[in-house]
Structure formats: structure tokens, C-alpha cells
Length: 112
Image (cartoon, rainbow, N blue to C red; front, side, top):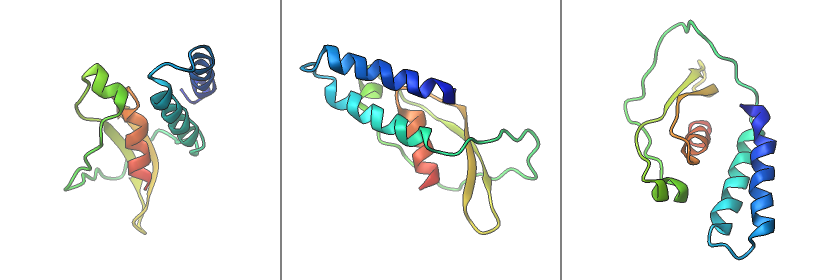
């Protein structure tokens, strides 16, 4: 999936070049910024046999993206990650996502 980030950015930039007055210009620029931020994150390995499962007692609420509002998309995103002994979170992986920019927003929220 990581290899598709440059393609996604190119497609969005091409659209912006062709239709500079479109009402989606702002959201597309925001989407490009999010994709670039996520693309800079280190490659995360998939661990198939974790030592123990941890669940957060309070799950963060994500603000909907404009694309999710237009598409009337909502629900849960499942993220697996490594909780270190020093209280940090490493190697987050989207196990079940929703798309529409929400997966990227979840990754940023997990890493903040």
C-alpha cells in the first residue's frame, strides 16, 4: 500500500491542475498533506503473534473528513500496534479501515 502514496498524490495534483476552481480544491490539498505525512511514517511490520492483547479503556473519537461526510461513512477503525514498556506506541497497522481519509486520521491520532 505504501507504494501507492505517490500515485495518489499525483492523481490529486493532476485534478487540482485541471480544475483549479473546483469546490473540492481545499479538501484535496488537505488530503495531499495527510498522505505525505503518513508516507513519512516508518514502515510497520505485521506481528501475527503478539505477547498479549491490550485494549484501550477509552477510544478516541475522530472528526469526520469532508470526504467521509459526503460519502456518509462512519464506523470503527481497527488498529493494531505495539505498546512499549515506556508507554509509547510503535508499529501501528490498520487492520480494518473505512477509507475516505479516516484511516490516515486514525494513524495520526494513534501516533500523537
